[in-house]
Image (cartoon, rainbow, N blue to C red; front, side):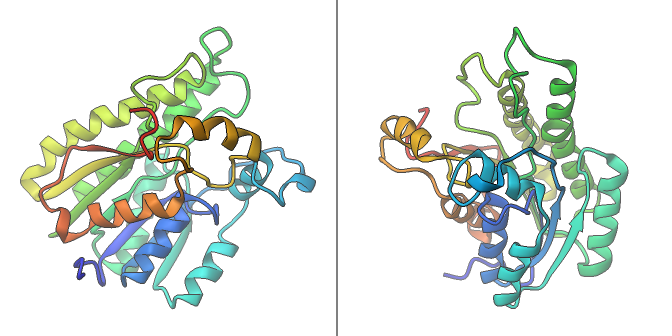
Length: 270
């Protein structure tokens, strides 16, 4: 099936975890002949090196603390046309620089995938323990960063436009933990709809993916066993499942799909 993506230009944020959604999506786009601008930021985490050989938070934290070396190796194997940028999407000057460099290298950006996200990895995200820094840091990346990236995409638009944002499948019904993270994702769902209405006149579609429990390296065996009974299809979501949905939304086949929040969750959190 011809998806009309060959030689399109895509920016994907949050791409340095080799097991992550961003990296997997980049590889999926590369197979379609898309030209890639990959934006990442090394997030310093504490982790136990001895535990990084198996899935769990230590493997996940190590991946997000690293650079693009492993992902680039896979891209080169596909002969991908790509540009790597280490930057901070929460800063508008950095966002302007990202677009300046991508436009200078590839020309107009056709597709934007806002995958970068922040979440407090401690115990500072319940209503009794929440800190100002946890609120500010989470919203800076998830809300401000996503909005800044979309704003610049729209300002510099070409003749093709696809924006894909990220929520989470529990954003509309979350427990009393990670309230800042989930609230930031609910905000993304809200402005996805609003922006879709505003930019429809330019032929730009704006949609949002809401993944369920996805194995990006962070789900250990114990957590998998506890969450699997909550997934009607009986298995963890894989990054490739998300990537394939993104490819569709970015394609010519999805030209009349906009303002949607699409759960890719195996039935989790329905």
